[in-house]
Length: 222
Ligand code: HEC
Image (cartoon, rainbow, N blue to C red; front, side, top):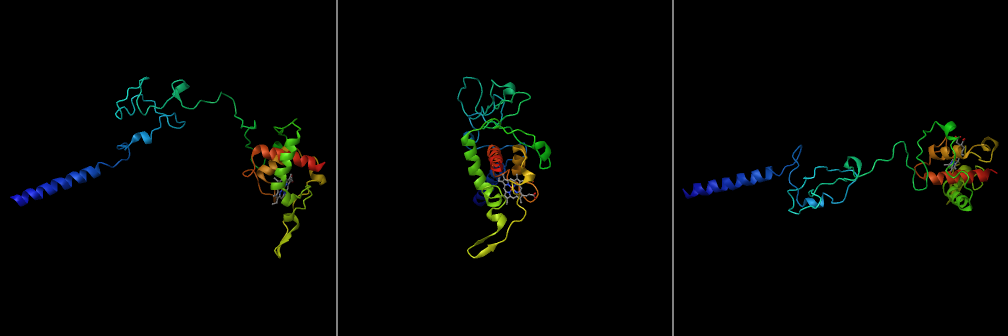
């Protein structure tokens, strides 16, 4: 008798533990219970999560909210649709901090790109050219040469520590007749998307820096 009672007690505890563990599972429509949910649900507005149910999370605390919503509510009642982020005004495109519009022309649109005006059109300050020169020196000189003549060390080949590095053939002489009349837009597009043997530099150099380089290349050509 004693033995049987002990056995059923063990069985009872075993089943209870198994049920408890099984009930911890979350998935599908069943989110499960969160431990310390305040850690996951920010009190601040979050741009990409919007909880509009004023009662969401009310089970969590007994705090009375002045504005009548509970812990997880996360919407901005001042914005349209109670969004946390505002919609940009209709028919507008946002510029970056340097007042430059986004650039999305694909590689094969050089002819159109060449007509695009630099955002620095009309700006002719020494700082712009000084920046352009520094950037050109960093990104272009090793191929195109300090004066744009197509004779950088990569273009001519060089011997480093006794090892001969062969020349990267075909680097353009930017002072040549063929390039004399290219526009800043053209240069900007070539830097961005590359052309022929020249690889694109769009991912390495910011848009405004590319325009600065283009301006500097024009002064080199003079
Ligand atoms: C790895 C070497 C290399 C680097 C770095 C490089 N270029 Fe070039 N560039 C070339 C080559 C090669 C060509 C010739 C492309 C062709 O016609 O096949 C060229 C061509 C050009 C042209 C002429 C495009 C045309 O219309 O034919 C311009 C303008 C130019 N580069 C500007 C730049 C500027 C500005 C930089 C720096 C941001 C730069 N390049 C960096 C190798 C380079």
